Length: 178
Image (cartoon, rainbow, N blue to C red; front, side):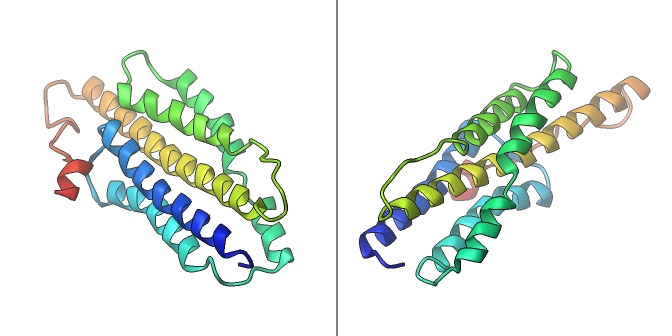
C-alpha cells in the first residue's frame, strides 16, 4: 500500500467492522445453538482479519479486477431476501426478519459508488468489501433461521407434543465475550 495514511484508515475501518459485526449479532440477540452458528459468526471476522493481514502486500490489477468481478453477494442478498420474506409465514421470528432487512440493507450499501480521488480509492473499495462481508454473514444467519424454523414448524405439525422442539438454550454473543 503506497499511502501510509490510507493504511491506517483501512485498518481502522476493519477494526470498526469487527466491532460492528459483534454489535449486530448482539442486538439481534442471535443465539448459537451449534457449531455451525459459531462458524457463521466467525466467517466475517476471519475475512476481516485476512484482509488486515494482507493490507501491506501488493495486489496485481488483474487479481483486483477478478475479485470485484466475481463478488455477487450484494446481488444475491437483494434477490434472495425478498424471496425468503415472501415464503415466510407471519409467525416467523422477529430476529429472522430483522436479519433479512439488515442483510439487504448492507447488500444495498455495497452498491453505493464512492467517487473519491485516486489516493483514497483503496479506502472506498475496502468499505464496499466490508458491507458485502457483513451482508453475507447475515444472509447465512437468515438462511439458517429460515430453515431451522421451517423444520421446527413441520415437526410440530407432524408429531404434536412429542419430542422437543428446537427451542433449547442457546449461547448469546454477550456470554461468549464475558
